[in-house]
Length: 494
Image (cartoon, rainbow, N blue to C red; front, side, top):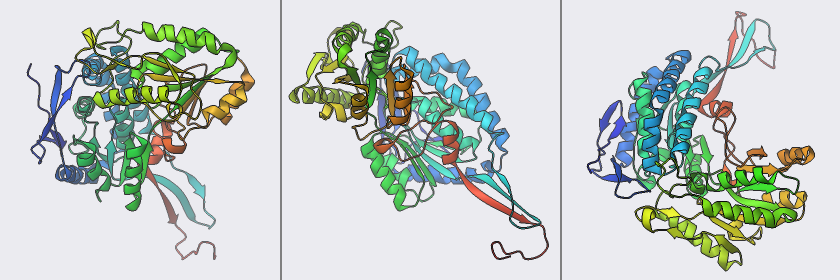
């Protein structure tokens, strides 16, 4: 089966990488299905992309923000028309089931419309001056060329979180999609171009992190960096950016806890546990990877969860009846296998799963069985370290206070959930769970685009994606003073 060759987008032109090297984008559900061939870029390609973005910035920054917003609005309309095609292609390159990839495209549509609205709302402040005949105000200014490094698990939604607010604020962009899922970023940017985005405003450089990602972070022409990925790589990105005094937004790992108390609606909690743990095959930074169960309901909940996990239909996500797709690549299968072994060595019990699925319909893909681990203690590695696979740990607790302590006993702080009918517990959870996101009676996944997305501790560095948090990252404040007194006035002295 022949496949298409894709090139980098630099200054509005599709060009081959100067390295002369390419890589294949392979369907993780069927490694015989090659989605496309992409450029394996290097520092020279990044340099060309940054120069194109710098040139485009001169005109894009003064293009009126409401007009920039109209391009985003048209992008949203076109994405709606193309939603099914883009979802099908995303399932092929990434594996998650078609209902989820439709949701991924929908998230980009939602972000387009939300950020289009911000084109008329990039508000600053006006304030009284302390001197007569003087006017004071603040305005949002674009940052300049923004470098973006995107992950493979939400290959259109997360690039839209980065690109759309950056664009409405008047920045130009160089984006490196994940090497596992470049096509969805191409589809997103092609839609922007079809909606009227000028040449050079967004540039795409594909390739691997060390070769193409690292030069984006260290390039002197890149004024801000937005990174989503692992905490290990994020630390390097942050340190490199800090050395050059570059603002840097880091969205990293999670080890998210769902607390189920003895007064919870157990059937609801069970639905949430299955979706939170095994949606996207557990490959979400917000995945439910720890379920903290009150000892009174632990046995009943555990038995029902194992039954549900065993019954999940795993396979190629293009089939509408499939409930869980593959893991993205061999490396993720190795990680899930490794942590299943570690859990057993630590004394936990694997109640189902723990192994690769490699027979019959699973023979050509990277599939891992939905895995439930019981008898987990809060300090075990399986309860502390991110697996990024369909592996969920069950931890028993004695009380709500005990549950809060367990939930907070990790290095991450992205998402949390509480299942309880007690309003007092709900409000304490909202206050006391150390996380950027807390759900009540819903799983740890399901964020909406108009609220800030991000976490605390080793999940992030204080910046947020989504909502007005994104505008704060992609603009810089300028204070403006207009003195119309016609004489020298010295602030604080006169």
